[in-house]
Length: 217
Image 1 (cartoon, rainbow, N blue to C red):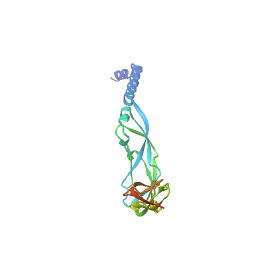
Image 2: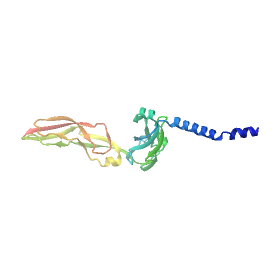
Image 3: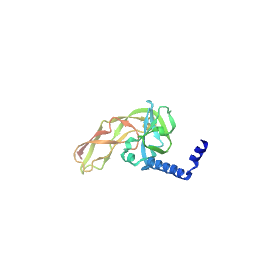
Image 4: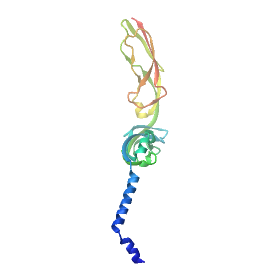
């Protein structure tokens, strides 16, 4: 019995090794055929932010993912099918270092994550605050010759804003986008967007009504 088994294992050994190698090659080819690597940028999302806190700033606003999948899957992949979600339930006021791991990435089946960059971000938390500030109308140009401006008002005249306390402490007024009054020879009423000037806050209104009254000199 042992002799028969020995003969079975040793006879045509080269042929058997070639067969095994061929089988492994075919398995690898079928499994990875059409496999493609690509890189995408995904915006960061946050969940479970403590109700009394606001994000003051963050070291990154998007995460770069190197992924691999079959070409068919990647062609059908929409950017909104991949999300990077960060849980803020355990953050504190000040600086927080948070790891971005594969568990942070919500991704369809069949896609492998090869690399996450950056793999760690810093989130700076602050107290949530609110305040009321005046609206400052910005005018561009000059009225027609022989006319002068009587008054410039906005409705509403003040806006309530919300956000991180340190950010709001820097805000004394909210400007409007420029209102063109070049050559104006009659009263003007116009809807104008506010200009956040790169500052981060929330407000119920992002458009105000501006009234410019003029008269002959």
